[in-house]
Picture (cartoon, rainbow, N blue to C red):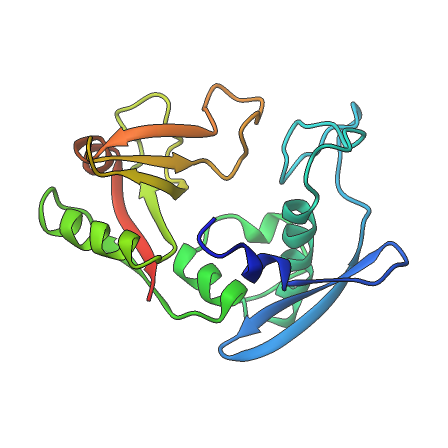
Length: 200
């Protein structure tokens, strides 16, 4: 949302049902080509990105599952995560600041501890500067709408109410009891999240 062209520029449509996707190993571009065969269950629903949405629904954006498939495939090169394997299962966990840099080549920092005052000022400054931001939830969080030990992307900040709209990367209609979008006051952010990450 902060820089959609960065995502658009990740993809080269090859015209034969395949896509070449760019990631960054430090500042060095690294490319991987994937086909458009995406994992679905017996009901024809996506099982990873776009979870529980129908593959046959042509209104659903494909860039997320294609990027995820490419990320799983390029992980085999070993520079994304230790012991890299071409496997969706090996993408579980990880740190969002690493992904920020691997997708955009923009430096990022993570594991910034949350406090009620100091981080709020830093967060607002980073948001106003156009940084990519996310929060990492506690295990367990007190709010039943928040997924435990999970990354939430910051979508919007409302200065009037000092509240933050966060996005669950499972998606809007993800088939779980956890919503795709949640408004949190700063007090809620601190209560439900351990840390935050930001691009520089």
